[in-house]
Image (cartoon, rainbow, N blue to C red; front, side, top):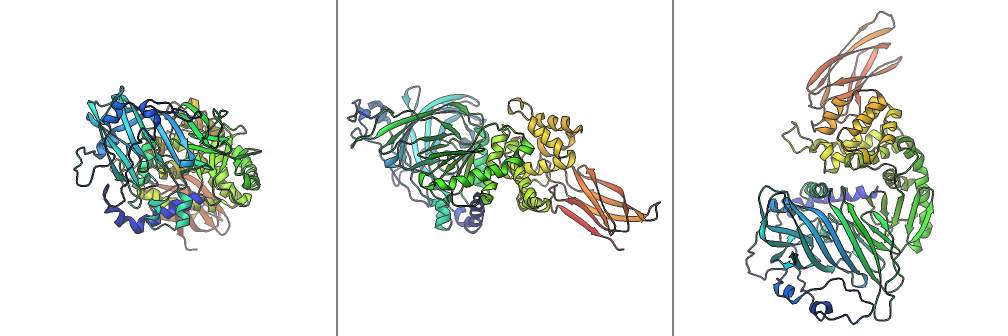
Length: 638
């Protein structure tokens, strides 16, 4: 998928520019911008008067008391910042509920938001200050607690979790420090433009076309798409500043934010101005919601207004997103496609790709999808794909269906298999993707696809369990675990229990019943009749690193039958994780494969019989990820 090219470009550019990025400090190197709070002339509601536009909708109101308490967004030059926010304080803030009133003005490329935030202190010390961050293109207008405006100091900090490369951070001073595990509700108001821009990527030297097709977030009359933390921070967050090029810290911070807010609820009410044709597609948090009939029709002077809403919904391992557009609807087979009118002919390729992937998906996941597959056409054909659940946003071009099968098949898998556990939710989709490679090519190429990511997994895994930064799959926030390692786990289970048995467990999986960590383990054990506790302990419930296998010695002798040989293979596992691996012996006459279990830090001698003199011994065929290699060969003399 082209999205992986984007990540590769970031990593490459990051390696070249990491030293320069590491020298930046918050607020130093990137230009600072200021936006003054709207005056009563710009915002008639502020002084209590009614708007002159009969079609206008009052989104927020402010009092004179609010204006009197307002502070400048950025300290003037030479003024000392009096409130210092630490990364520990930023990491302590967890949002448990978002209630967002959003008004979009696409012609001005802007939004205005009133956000009610339930905030919990997950730190071990009381919080006298709550740090709140939004995109640097947006302007804080005020933060209140129990109807009273709170003092705050706003500064710009460098962080590439937003496409501008900066965040506007409000250090909100509380009347009483927030105790550990205590929660409060803050009312916030902010506004400003979100325009197409790729400043953070261009600063790394990313080619213009690659950068623009990657950072396509915007508010415009033809398309509004804001993807949230990691792309455009259009809702309040509290995060540790990170920069592209500083190893993989930005991806770790994105994953950590998703994990921290997974149990939060998000509710949205969105009103949208329009002058021509009203938008007909709204996707909020990965869910298509209906757009109400216009509450006001456009005139020569004033816009029309449409609205949509999302009730309070658990966020899960994702970020709040908002998409508004006008699209032509096409449906065929398993796909519902929302395409630009001028691009309607390219929808057929998506429909055919979904039909091509469907048999394999249903073979493993059953015949009944949990939710529909939705494909939304992005503004430009080259725009990189983005996925949220079973909704795929992709720039459609005249690609053949064969080229679309991989991204469409991945999204189709999410339509058939849903899990609250990200290692299963995303791991199954990656696993099915490798099965597709096996289906159209062979097993070797499918395993090579996994092998391409094993180096990054090896780098992330701790050498000694408990002494590194490894992550068990139940709580993984890094994609190298919940995608790559999870796919390896499913491949190993496949080889241990068989295709039919693993498919039976996947088809029996019920996300509503997954209330205990060992739920999926029991499904696989029930389907296979095998005790797999040892495997899940080493690979799912704990992070014991990776195995480190080797062939210590091979000895062969004539067996009782004249043409047979008894081969003894000495195998060592110097890693801490146990594994069941394949052992293959080849002769000129035959090939024999058996499976052997090696616990962590163990050795074994495995004996096998083969017809003809053995010429080669192979331990592991690539399905078990290891510290150094996933294929061990020993050639024997004839």
